[in-house]
Image (tube, rainbow, N blue to C red; front, side):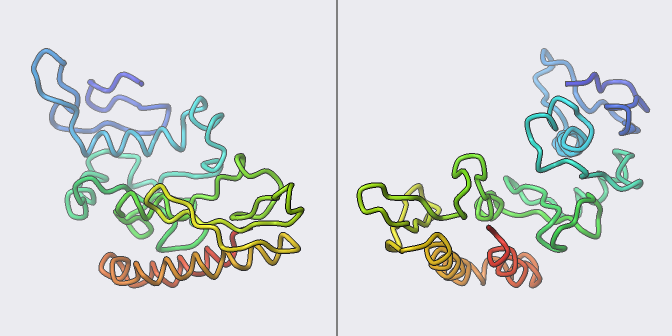
Amino acid sequence: MPSTRKRNSLVLGFGINDADYVVDPAKKSGIGVCPAYHAWLRMIIRCHSKAFLKKNHTYFNASVCDDWRYFMKFREWWHSNVVDDWEIDKDLLIIGNRVYSADSCVFVPPWLNRFLLASNSARGDLPIGVYYHKREQRYRSQLSMGDGKQKTLGSFSSPSQAHSAWVEAKKGLAAIKKVDMDNIDVRIYRNVLKMISDMK
């Protein structure tokens, strides 16, 4: 992790630490890193760390807006919006958004961030929610229920049929969580449905 103690120091060649206080006190002081700074630094890393991007291709072409290059500007937004143990999301309010900014970002609970994970590398060439059952020689559809359990939705003659079953079941799970999503921002639920429909 880059050194961050000097005021106005450049972070990963992009961010500017303009804090008027020490954001990461020495460990011996017993005081931890400023949580606003930690969130800002993680955002900068996602967009500007070559090591991070090499392992996390979904963040290619993601960027941070000019205002948020400056930590203290980000900190203003953070203090007005932060929810304990929630995470910053950049594309639930605006589908396909690649820019971290005050207009596009929102704090969401971890379950909502995980809800739309596609796990592309794990499932290979088959559509999301689908696997091939060798003994049956049919395609099965399976849905993660969000509690560590998987629900089998049936077996089908084609991957597209199995995937369609997954889409409908996933939308059903989203409907159960609609009130929770609406309490965060009323745009989220409709965007989640659109994103589920577009998942391959």
